[in-house]
Length: 128
Image 1 (cartoon, one colour):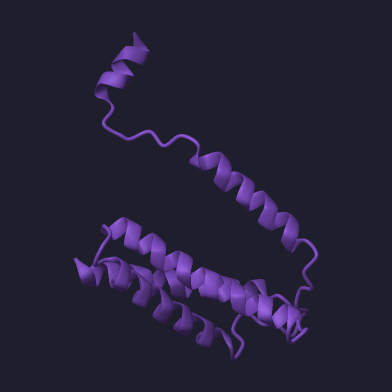
Image 2: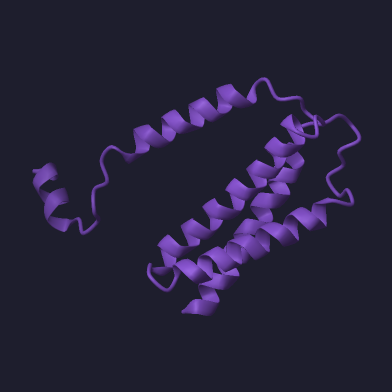
């Protein structure tokens, strides 16, 4: 009876198969990141490069969200903006790690996430 009631009253779409793929991707990222050289105590939470990470991520996410909003819905455009900005931030950290041979800064990635969230949210609200 509960199963029949639940199916009749539910209006949500069922997305099957996406969550195991996301879980696998997170596991692979975690395994791959285990060997990164982390920055030492010189990497402060409020260092001089953190506002640059915030601003760059906000601009990238805002531009990608605004561009995607022309063809997609607000939620999809926001996800595209967030993903684009975080991919750019991860690419910058990879460049720092492999090319400049410094370190991978998780604090920079936290500022990238904050900036991407801010930019994507503002752009999604402006395009409505």
